Length: 105
Image (cartoon, rainbow, N blue to C red):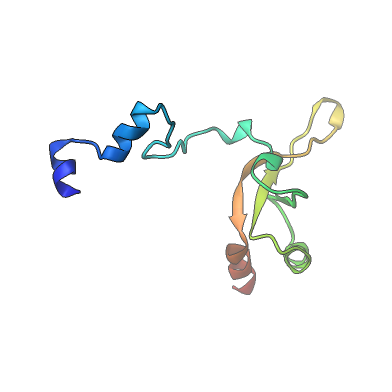
């Protein structure tokens, strides 16, 4: 492998995939997608259990007892014109183990 890396020759698997026109993932994932283009349903299974950015610890503890998900989408509640509130903009994911660690500390 080191010789192929040193010479710049691609492995035979890459050559076969190119010959067959098979797509493959790039070496680095596309990690710079703006979060504004996603809704929580695109990154979670149904039913989606969202956590707002500002949440009470008691509410969070209750949620963790009732739900067995490993991660939760975090949403920022926005306001539409006319004073109505939307479903919330996806701002990131938080893992269960991080939430449990925060509650314990």
